[in-house]
Amino acid sequence: MKIRPDILRVYREVHSWVGICAGLLLFVAFFAGAISMFERPLQNLTTPALDLPPPTPLSQTPALLEQVFKAYPQARRSYTVVLSPDRSLPGRVAWRSHPPGHGASVLNVATLGSDGALVVRQPQVSPVASFIDTLHQKVGLPLPPAISRPVMGVVALLYGLALISGTLVFLPTLARNLFAFRRIDGPRKFWLDIHNLLGFFSLPFHIVMAVTSVVFAFHDPIFAVQSRLFASPSARHASVDGSMPGSMHAGTPGPMHEIADGHPGPHPAISHDESALLAPTDLLATLETQAPGFVADTLFYSHNGRGDMTLRVTGHDSRYSTRGPVAGFTTMDPRTGKILSADYLPGHQKTGFAILTVFFALHFGSFGGNAIRWGYVVLGFAGAALFYTGNRLWVDARRRREKAAGFARDSLATHILGRLTPGWVVGCVIGNAMILAAAFLMPDLMTETVVSELYYAVFVGCIVLFMLRPRTTRPSTH
Amino acid sequence: MSNTRQTARRHGLNNRQWLPKVLAAVFPGCGLAFAIMGLLGLLSGTTGDPRTLSAQALMWLTATLWLLVLGTCFLFASARQAWAVLGGGCVLLWGFFLLLRTILS
Image (cartoon, rainbow over all chains, first blue to last red; front, side, top):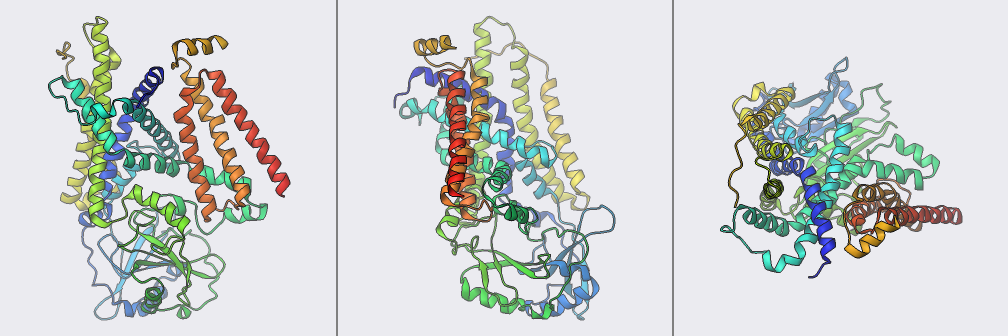
């Protein structure tokens, strides 16, 4: 394929500058993202087992709920019936309570003891797995959410730009260089061949990641513009306090999103009797007839503020891809068990929604089960390696140019980048390894603050160590 | 400016004006993507409610369009051309949008 040489030159420059600006941030995003493919299993492995009787049989859930509501009336506002309890979400019923003051909400789980008495615990879920997921979403920077989101968006745009330019630059030599692996031509060709090989063969993966990350970063502002442009004034007002946040549709619901944080506030007028709700066993039976093959994981009940109860059922179906990282969901009428919306119900989506779900599933690897998840781990690490080789190529190219210009030593910028790249990469890898090891060895000490401080201490420490290594004279380059 | 365009023609493209070209892609380019979203939204009769398929599809389209504009803005012969095409297109399409909205309402 022929491309005009001036266009190639322009895009080669764009590729190297965009790459050097975003490469290290993308390294962390991909490395942490690869680990996050198994976020929930990691969370279960690192969370200590709770001193709790086995979950009440599902058929006895109404009796359990009755006791919960008697002892904790505020739980009525929103609660979750847990269908597949694990260490991250044990017990049979879970809800969030808001301690007086401005503290964070507390997760409560409940089950019945062997004597039929209510047992309630506050599980201490290990924060390590979700820290790594957050690290992934924040491209490794400890920024508050309001800033990290647009920063991530800019990095995603740079990433998309690097993909477009990189593909263009590689296309003319594709046939000649694709399987080239020139070890003897010196380190530059070696790294270049690895970079091209990784880049080309994971290109579809990278295109999906670039587009979805741009969407994850900017969907809220885009929806805000849409609401200004298209909605009638009354509808716009309604969407402001709408019952479903926009992030539910486009964003990345975390593993705990099924226990949504109900707003602390005055109790809504509860006009309906809970006994009018269908018992979980009956509800699952109606679900099974309406959506056979769908395995429900949680039933999330909440008041919609108008005195009505809403029910969202999350779950998965091994035959279909899911909207979230591990689950799709459906809304049901909690009294009749009728499915109200199948927009995100795996296997029952209309074509349009099913197509959009594919984009999410391709980002999360939430299709095809564990084999695909492991594949995504490999692709994620390969992506991280792609960005490392890119940075190395940049440093080597500048060294060569400076040497040709007659400098005895690297310029300051080349020197700093030559040190920052390995320091950053090693810091990220060891930092993640350390917090995971600490999560296994000292689960009781792990709080969000400890995890964050430990990671960033290791990360910054590694960078400083690499920076402080004595500056040697130019190594002989090939 | 016409000088740069002549140089571009003689020596081919270069990145000397990369910053204004990128700024053209970021600002009027974004406006252009939104204008296309607006026009398609009016034609499809979307309500803009994030729960609907049309709003979500338009959101994906807008993000993708913006990314494509960013990726191709370096092909403009000069920064002036980039601003003229993207800025002009942005104004023109928003004009169409307002016109269409008046006609449809």
